[in-house]
Length: 211
Image (cartoon, rainbow, N blue to C red; front, top):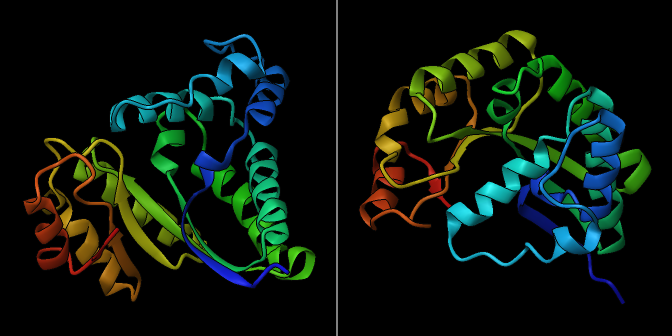
């Protein structure tokens, strides 16, 4: 018997499976640094956060169109439903895509199309959390948030992730203040590879839940 569960820490781009990555690469003519599913799967051995991030970003380079983002999200929801998930709050890294020249609207349209079908198609309610890349500038994060607010895409909250060393939560004080002013929840990854003080910055300076 599969018990109903909630998934509260899930990076959508991290749900891409090897077969899907290779299919998207072929669809979009993206050259990958591995030849087949087995070679890609063998790389899922990580020595540290950066080695994980290197593969994470290489894989997401296959995402180019709204359809790609929708396919990724539908695939996650289908697997989650089978596992008994009934509510999912998912993270998305829009800057990782806009930095590659993908329009923000293209990213959000694909993801939200799939998430909106969650209750009807998969029996899963969802919430979208936009995560800012901490190794980019605070200005870039604030610009991304303002763009999303102008578009009007429903989001549950704003988070912070990616390379931690040298990028303390306090760098994004204004971004999180803006999010809270809009009534959004805030959450920040902290303590994955940075000093313990980053956890307290996330809690004290940003008013965020550390995760």
